[in-house]
Length: 268
Image 1 (cartoon, one colour):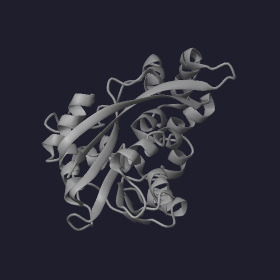
Image 2: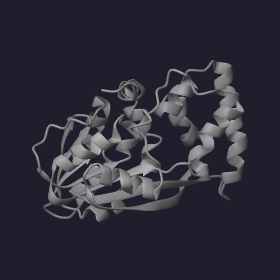
Image 3: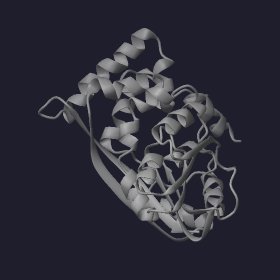
């Protein structure tokens, strides 16, 4: 396990419910397209790697698939079990999965690669558990981030807060460009065939309090940065967020936050 992996375990420990109440709706946007690209239908054996609160598992079960799902965080596993009682959900983490070679017709991972220290090794493991000719389909956030995704980070910077030096990043040899070409090349480098990638763009509809609730509760890396500040600095971050969010306000007072994700798929 890399230092990045260890950091991710600490960051997400105990955050399941706060994630479900905040960022989960955003992350669910690509789910149906992800399953379409993976060819998930009735009777398909599907693995949802990094299930989170279970959105992909729920959607795959609704299609009549035979679904297994894993997540590294026990709280997420409990939420996913409640949401998708027909799925087999268990605690497990990339790059080591408790499944046989070629066990699944399709393997999907919705944003899970954002949270692993060795993405190529993780993809190679997803390929291992996919039957020959089956599909691996995964999403990540694009970089540089779309304006909506960057909003909270802008508020943090405007408040004078810097990223803590003890938060590890991916090692240079494990990193890759978060572009369509870069993501497709990553899949190919993990031994997957016919890799292709597309960009998904959408405006996430939310409101200021919902959008603030995730980081204010310590969800994800950006949340840990927020809750690590003094009460005065947290209040300043929120004040800056209120000011910056005005450019994304809809006529009904909601926020319309532009986001871009990358969806890549390939054959095992």
